[in-house]
Length: 154
Image (cartoon, rainbow, N blue to C red; front, side, top):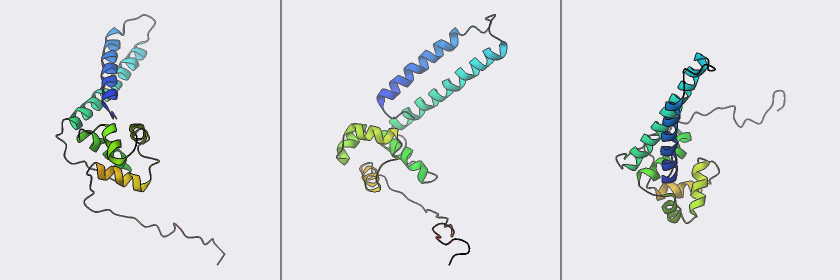
């Protein structure tokens, strides 16, 4: 996922380089087996499609047309935070200033998908982005979790 303008520009450059590399592949090279050539072409196509998709997603977020982000479960929340920041047109530096930290900290949070963030800080980030959760949450309770007893011991 593209998270900032620098990554956006790097991805665009990589896409242009990939397009040029794909054009320059010589599929009729005598030392290249047809399966190898096809494999090379398929690899270029997959990478090309992925980069185009990432660029399109970033541009769509930056356009300001996205007003609601859907998440399927809490595992989707980190990506939603990043997407919300981009959709608001907010830079990592601006978010950092809003929550009273350094831009590099936001960069680390986003690179790590908010894995090492405290709940309190997570709520600060969500608040700074104006995010709210709506709807219902289902919690499946496993009765065996937390059971400290072992068989044969009372």
